[in-house]
Length: 397
Image (cartoon, rainbow, N blue to C red):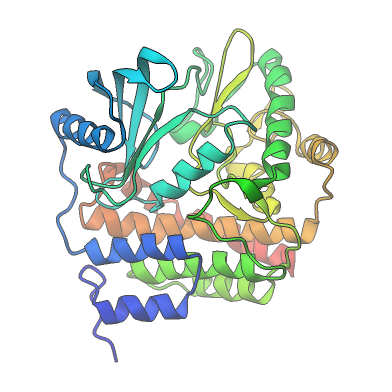
């Protein structure tokens, strides 16, 4: 019998979880690293000088020319990550001297969503010719130069909501004017289809694994999220146990894996207010090679929906769900499987409950994040999340 202290996890317990919940190797590595470091110090505010020194060392390790970091400043947004904006004066290969606006994106001591910076780096680089994304420059995958794993990417122009518009945390509840909706909606749908139809076979995606035909893709997901639940929760929940069992009993088969953004929604893209053009897709940290239904289920979640002036519910505040699905099928050439779509809606609800009730609690309790007030507040909606999950499961019976 393993003696368990989740705040100071033993190597035996960590290996037990790894064996019980096998998943993709990079996700396993990231979660294992998190547990091995959990007993260490919590988050403490970092002076910009520390980040500037770390970025300087990172760039120097991979760039031979002269450079100088100018105007460093904290950057809001990015949800669970720490971000610093700066200007790099450098001799850019193939370009010459240039002043380039850049962003450092870095984990805190523990994040409510613990992910791999290498996966995010590789995925953004892979899709740069498919959809608009910021250019990526350097990755500190293990935190060798900075306090925590990080990547450096180019600053992208645009806004995530209208200047005069209202929105909640992380873009939730964003209301878009009708004229802007008409411009954004077709791009929103077509770009999702482009991501799903992209031939990723020749891209450098060594941090990813391609699931075999069948249920392996679904199994990796359930294993990863149930492992995180076991790692982080203190108070057990019959509803969470039931949901995990339901997900395992109803895993859908997958024939043709695609790239999946896994957080494709309002708030995660930037656009030009005047032209209405989408200028950049952000937050690829949860991306994977998997089932496109995962994106479709996430994008159409009620949490990201907003009603228009007539009271019609709009997917991500852009267009009605039926129109969204019809436009996606036309743009992608894919037929949506409603049963698979529903399974991923349950999986997504389960993952949010895990992050809210387990991970959010754990990192706030241990002082591991710069957003302890926010994640503590989120715990309060746990009962609502589990009720939504119960309703979804009953609909699938």
